[in-house]
Length: 151
Image (cartoon, rainbow, N blue to C red):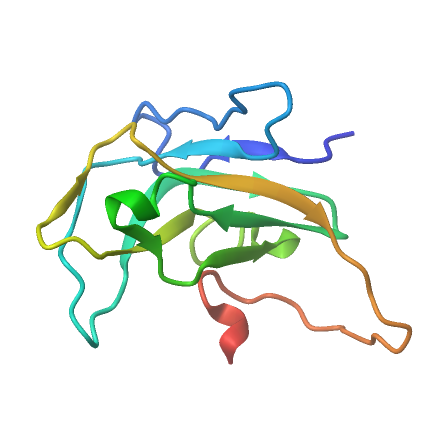
């Protein structure tokens, strides 16, 4: 039985996307690469974050989620995730609006454009279990992709 892992998202199958890997035996995170070149302009007040596609989707058990996290060296380069940590629920996988393709959201706090090249490691993914409270009665069903539970 499959428990958790990565797959290439629909539409990215022929783009030479690499599945994330851990670099050392005791690493918690799986390093994720950019799926294409992206330019992140210097931050200005009111600016929206730049979404960097990964070309990936991930699956996990119903009582799990995965986190998108910045790499430790990212802030030294002015590369900061807009939401600090991205939390992606198990039911995001293969959702009807984007197949579960996950993106990283970044701001650039340098004075010049930050160029991210296809294949650059842009962040990491860590899988986790979660717990429910005794009174939990969630029955909702995901109907979309990115930001769909904000409604």
